[in-house]
Length: 203
Image 1 (cartoon, rainbow, N blue to C red):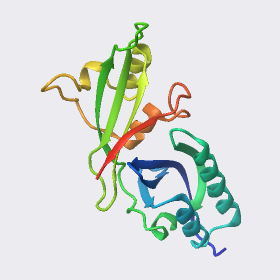
Image 2: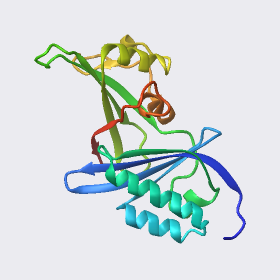
Image 3: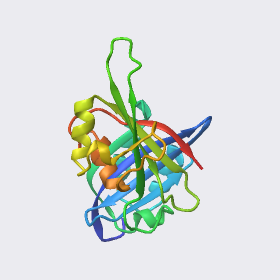
């Protein structure tokens, strides 16, 4: 492999689904807060691009292992933390220019439909400033009331500051960044190890 400057990133792999259409979205989050995203039609094409990007065999093996893990997960979301990659890699893969994390509109819906009386809160984040040519991302996760409150407080929000999807005119105090989204949903960065679930995508 040629000598390239390395940088440490956290990687998020997520399969976007819409009907029979699937896309692999990979996010490279740098230590300075910038991030890049790439979209591929499937995991095989992504791995082929990695193999052609002049990276070490060891790094190819890491990506191959992650993609194999991703295939076995439901929902298909996988996180890899603290990986050293060449600084040129995202650009070589056709990714977005490194920049501020994507922003998401946050909302919630109280679900009291459980026959046993268990009340859950569905927290939903919808991508706001989707890069041109990419699919917008919408993800969500269900929490108990205590978990719901604790997760929001982890990003300095209170429940009354988040839009209630059932109330007309309700609005969130602010949008959240993708870094904050991962603190809400990532089983490593957040308070427990529950996985996030995709609620759908929109073009």
